Image (tube, rainbow over all chains, first blue to last red; front, side, top):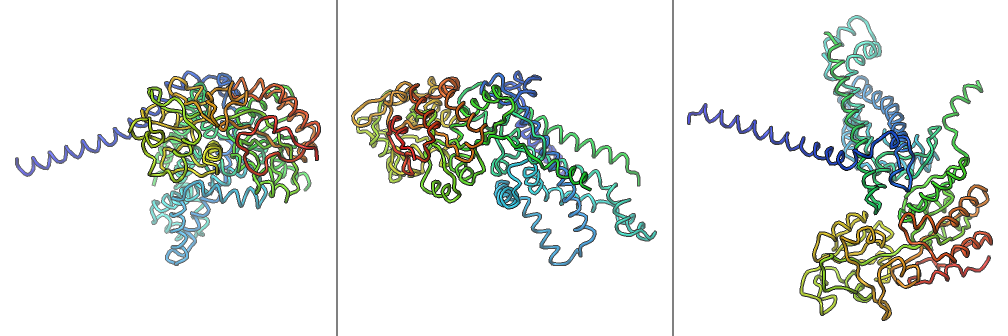
Amino acid sequence: MTRSQKRKVFNFFMKLVGLLSLALALIVLLSLILDLAIRGGGRIDMDFFTSFPSRRAGQAGILSAWVGTLLVMLITAFLTILVGVSAALYLEEYSKQNHPMTKLIELNILNLSAMPSILYGLLALGIFVHYFKLGASLLTAGLTLSLLVLPIVIVSTREALRSLPSNLKEASFALGATRFQTLYYYQLPSAMGGIMTGVILALSRAIGETAPLITIGALTYIAFLPQSIMDPFTVLPIQLFNWLSRPQAEFHVNAAAAGLVLLTLTLALNLIAILIRIRVRKSIKW
Amino acid sequence: MNFFLAILVMPFLSFAQLIRVDGSSTVFPLTEAVAEEFQAAHPKHRVTVGISGTGGGFKKFCRGETDVQNASRPIQDSEIQACKKNGIRFLELPIAFDAIAIAVHPSNSFANDITVEELKLAWQPSAQGKIMKWNQIRSTWPDQPVAFFGAGSDSGTFDYFTEAIVGKAKASRGDYTASEDDNTLVMGISREKNALGYVPLHYFEENSGKLKALKIIFKGKTQTASKEAVIQGLYAPLARPLLIYVSEKALAKPEVQLFTEFYIKNSSALTKEIQGIPLPEATYTGVLNQLKEKKWGTVFKGHSQVGMKIEDLLKKEKN
């Protein structure tokens, strides 16, 4: 075998390894979806979305759970965008890049993104629930989850800002624009795709969280919809977990159906992230 | 200006008439059923139920954050103190039974019963790493390894099993397959030929084809693991009452009084419906009397009383 043949064989071999790894990851996801669909798919109908939980597995639904999840996600998104994007803007554009304090903060943000989520729950229980007396409310849940995903948004926003060509920024300064004008009229709109992708990926992590919400005292049975952000709530993963722990097999079918809904929501969020990215890429012309 | 303030404050205003229940996940299915029926009968009242666990629930209850507490064990000394400190008096009302089944693989032909002493021998902390074979538990059993399965340490089942069998809550060997999820335990025992484990009785009854329950020999009496035996008081020491606690302050609210009454009156029927174990019918009348006569406090002296008769639960003096 000549050297060039050897290289080609090796090249083919590496391609195969890569393909198999990809297939493995996809097969796991697909079999999970298929398994949930087979066990719970038949349970999903309009009533499942419009009914409150019940002791009768056949009549139980996820109304309070999906409404709770939706509201918590809205509050989380609002807070995360507000605080996360502002923090990233400050770190990237206003702070002194080589100051030890800036370095320390950067290091801590990276560390925070690896913290177990239950710790955020305990923190929130002490601060939001007891000290500020916000109770086990939608607001507390939103605050807790946005703390949890802030590092993701900060890091991805900074990446998005950094990936913009710097000569346009400098041109903007050269024309006499202030830092804020440059940010507001050029950087933010251009980086919006990257920022929104980060926010949505962060939300799709937050949507499946159970531990921190149980810790702050999210409910399991609630048969009315919240009317203010200070009201008690439940979310899909908690409802799912509760059904799964019942002895009766009919509740396990409900759990599979709720799992399918949760998985679809997560995939939908990811899809939105991809669509935004494509759209923004098309609309920006340098 | 006031108008803007009102708009700002509005989303922060909350429901006033909430009945807040929290506590044990073992009691949850019954409370869920009661809450569902109660809201159907009284549409203007709203009930919420959480599952913080018996311990976590008592913390909230004794801070006055909840109205009703679901408990799979009696209130403990430290919790009584916490309640007292915050000036919270409470009613203690038994509402159903819970029991633990000792389960083995269905193909296991040599083990049919087990004494409480043998269970203690197998599960106490000093058994760890030492008692590993069936013939070490009973000499007539074969020289085969035992695969132990049991409740995880956060579960109320774990607390009660260790208290009833070993004699001290949370004292257990650690080298066993532990899970907080009873379905996982059922699956584990049903797949392991040499399994010896414990699960809540109703999990055994839902899966009676997959598991075999051992008879329990206690003080010379052989007892079958069944709901009937539990109701007749013939399943000591692995049967215990489930309780709800209602605070005095909460009972002052008419909706909580109404809910508690509703709970007791419908416990028997609803417990049966969710495949739980109800108290004897006559007992519920006694429980209702406790509510009417407002007998505050606990009959347990700060810890579980293993093998206590259900009538003893109602022998509280009015104070």
